[in-house]
Image (spheres, rainbow, N blue to C red):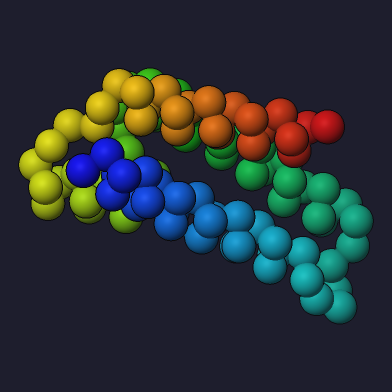
Length: 95
């Protein structure tokens, strides 16, 4: 079950990253708008970290659905891994 939880999280986060990458593509997008998207995404990551700390996975729809359907709680180790990954992602965006 642990690897399925991780897979569900990765599906969600890659979907969100894909949305971020597609957003600044277009003829009418300038550098300020692209920067705003990155700042906004960084703030979302901070929100996601605090949500995960409270065992709230609603922002990760695939993971949330999986946990609800399988009627299991997420292992502390996986939860900590998700928080570490999100923190690392946020740090990468701020560099």
